[in-house]
Image (cartoon, rainbow, N blue to C red; front, side, top):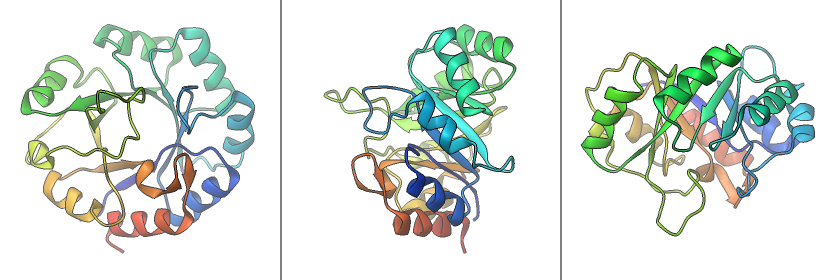
Length: 214
């Protein structure tokens, strides 16, 4: 089963080139200073200027205000706003209306109830739902923690919104994850790194190949 691939945490020219060369469908830029994958507005502008329109440019934010969103959208010519905090459905709708861009809402998952809550509150409100594992209690990062959840929770599920699977994915398990969950998209960050915040070109290529069934 083939699917679309988002490589998140692009913060260097090497990572950008590796992801585009591998055939990524979307690139994620983290606008969250505590993250080792954080990118500045200037850095985002420099990198995203080189990305063709055929590849989605996604900005990741954690409970950011409108001014911060606007600055990043302008600098990075973003196509999608990824809200990775505890933003309410009302906030998701407001961001979408104000900026006129597609909005992705990250959903932290550990049980079936989390999937049902996402259906009740965010499905059809956000353009994308991103199902990620709940972060460890000692982590300040909402994602990129290399933690996975039970993929069978998504087996046979149908959503109004498009959706992505994230959390603990890497070149060795992504094909199985897609087969089990039926995910149309997968999102990876730490699973294609050689050290925290530093991408590995070979792992990116292997991940895309495995996810797309090349």
